[in-house]
Image 1 (cartoon, rainbow, N blue to C red):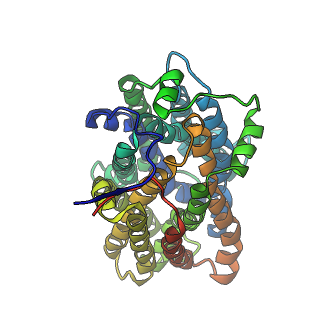
Image 2 (image 1 turned 180 degrees about the horizontal axis):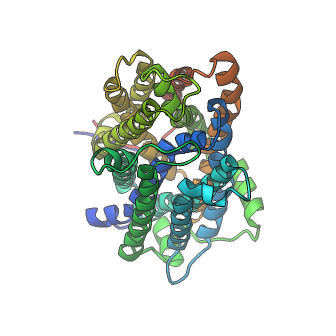
Image 3 (image 1 turned 90 degrees about the vertical axis):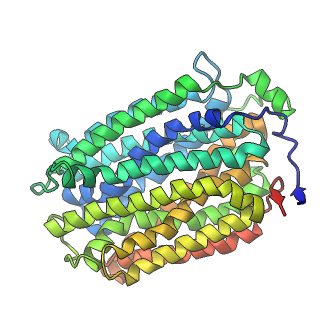
Length: 456
């Protein structure tokens, strides 16, 4: 058996970590993703209950990528330069967790503050708080895995992170359905109010997020700056520039692999944003037979609950498939593995158009789950080997531009397209998302992954 490898000098000096250590450092992401899944599966229906029309939903969802584009590079820049009693990355994801927990408690209760602003705007404000907090907590986790692991364990590290993300997302996605169907918590509410099963799901998710972050905080030790520099074989340096000047300078001088991965990320995240925003109204109309303007009937509540179930399915599939990614990538290479997974995602989304029953959507989400597992792991595994260790945080934050920009583009262009071309029939936005997944798969072939290790 031959081994082919390219440049791995940058991170191979780091010691190998135990499997337990690799899992512990990403437990916090389980909590973050539980909260993120609750937002993804329920924000559209909550905002519709607060009075938003279906074609207006992208406007509210634009908050997330805009905040992410601003917050993540700044958090990355400052976390690169931070060292205190908590560590380098840990202070930031702890602060983000506390803020996210606060936002999750308020999101389904925006009505208590509605005297200050219209209800739909207050709900959007709570969504903004959650988005900002998720981004503060999320960015340092990517950098933490890259900080701690040598190249030989990097795919394993991001795959473990993806598996925990999947488990957290299953919990968050299925909580509303479980509370309604198994514990008989009310899943309907008068117009303008959020059902109790959704409220309690957000409360439980907020607590889980905080507990998971504390787990990583107490079980993971970070390398101090001088040790990190020694392992990376380079000297820590400071340009004296401020955050914005550094971010724009590093953006202009980004590694070639980051630019190439940018196109893959653009198509991937355009598709994901369309799926998150439009799945509930799409299946409510296309599968459950609801009227396009229906957002309060029992059938619409059933569609909303089923969206949580199928989102849980794709996240559960991603958790399992993530465990297989290191083996598959070692045989096929990271590029071919990612292209294959994205193709599965594209076919999964397109197949939703042909769904004759809610149960058919489970099969559709299997393909999406395979793509999601790879999206959360392989681009970062390919990217990390091309980044200087002392700029890992800021470059991971800059890489988020290629996640947020496509979401912004999707949100801006989908509003008039869904209204005037699709006639508010959201299923077409889902189909186009599937096409974009296929374009992402084609784009992977142009990425140069210099430190991949392939066993042939």
